[in-house]
Image 1: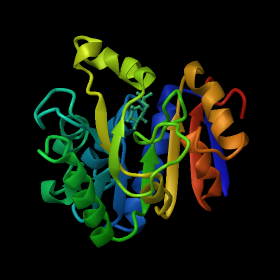
Image 2: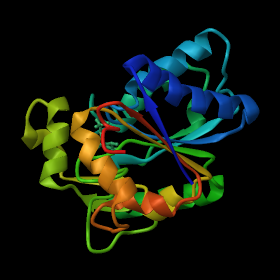
Image 3: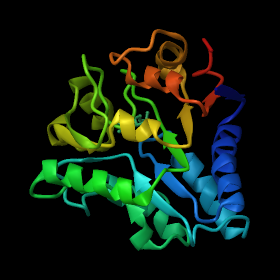
Image 4: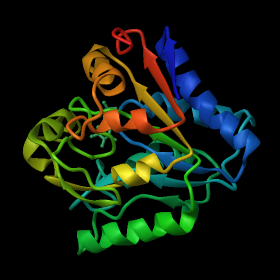
Length: 242
Ligand code: GLP
């Protein structure tokens, strides 16, 4: 089932996303969260921090598994996704750091790190809620459009378009890693519930293609149409064709 929520302001967008995550934690304090990076969830994380500070939500018993990580950046690099998560969320809430997991992009052997992350996810059991942003080419996590997609966590080569989109966070395009480690489509689709969020005019066409177009590996987010519990939160601009 696809439930599309169109929001009217940045504030409502962030509150809606954070509200869904907070209600889950209120009903299931031990929830397993699948988390995402990128600019889309930043305001959602800010709102969650606010809810935590006012005592409406606790992450003390929760655990988290992130979608992806760049390969080759040291963990303390300003653009590593581990550092992003620590700075934008984990350092400001009561989640136990040992319960937060981000794939290890700095590992000497990335293929092994992908296998280790797959094992970690297997041991964790089913993710209760997987938060997702959306790439301009329809990628989710770092699952880029391709003839075939991979189910479990794996190493991917990033499309130039993806590197270009993410270059705004780096001093220059040359410093954007060429590869990443990502949960696969299989790992993502195993979550009990998926929360897909997109905002801005530049996501309008791709989100309509993903949710209303054909199901194809050439638009990885279109695979979400096969999931039984997807909530989509958009702003007016991104939801224009929905
Ligand atoms: C990045 C991340 C994705 C994210 C996407 C969109 O490459 N790997 O997880 O959803 O791009 O990013 P943004 O939210 O900044 O548009």
